[in-house]
Length: 321
Image (cartoon, rainbow, N blue to C red; front, side):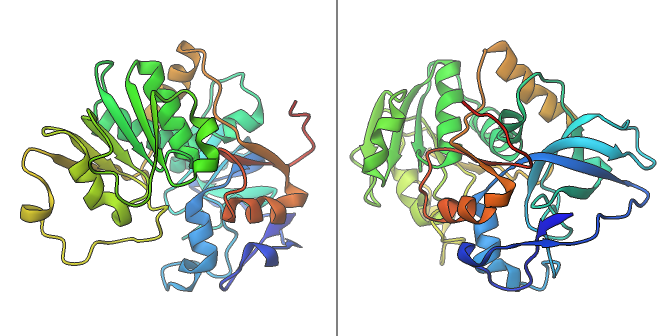
C-alpha cells in the first residue's frame, strides 16, 4: 500500500508516498480501508518537533483520524464492510495512523457511523467535532442566552465552534489575528482583530473557548465577564505551558477555567455528534479536499494556513463540487 512514513523532523515539503506492506491483523485490532482523513494542527507539531520524543513510535505513519470501511474485523464485533471512523487514543503517535491506504487500529478506538454523508464530510467530523462539542457542551455548558468568545476563530475548530454555537442560539464574538479572513466569519455577531491582547475590546462574553492556548489564555481569562467560564482546548499558538502560573493570582475572582481532552472518545460521543448534525440539518465544515497523491501539497497548505477550514484528504478521486 502507499503511505507516508517519517522517522525524523520532516517539513511538509519533504513528504513523499512510499510503498509499505498492508498490516497483518492481530487480536483486538481491526483493519480499516481508509476512504478519507482530516488533517490536524497536532500532526504538524508531530512532524516538525514531537517526532523526536521518545514516546513517539518510529518509523511512523502519521495521522490521528480517519473514515473508512472495515476490511478485516478480527475478533471484534465489527463486520466486514462496516462504515467507521477512528481517532485519537495514540493513533499516529504510539501506533501507525491514517496517512495510508489501510490502517490497523485498536477496535476500542474505532466507531460505527450511521450517516448518509459523503466521505469528505464524514472525515471532517471525528477529532474536530468531538473536541468542539465536548468543549462547548461538556465543559462550557453553552445555552442560547450565552455570549461565546471564540479565540482563534479562523482555525478549523474555530469555524466548527462558530457553527455549533450559532445553531444553539448563542451570540458569538469571533477573534482572530488573520484580518484577511474576517469575511469567513460572517455568521459571527461580532468579529474583532486579535493582536495578542483583547481584554478591554470584548464586552459581554460569559463563555470563551480559547484555541490558541497558553499563549493567550491569561488574557482570555481577563476578557470574559465576572462569573464567566473559559475552556482551553487547543494549542495553535505554539506555546504549550505557562511558566510560573499562579492560580490564586492569575485566575480572576469569579472566573472559571476548564479544559477538554479529546483523547478518549466513545461510541456514544460519536452517535451524539451525527445525531446533532442530522437533527439540525448541518453539513460538516470542509475547507478543502485533496487527493492522497497530493498529500504533500495538502500538508504544505495546512502548515501555511492557506485554506479556510478543515482540510480533508481523499484516497480516491472524488467530484467535490
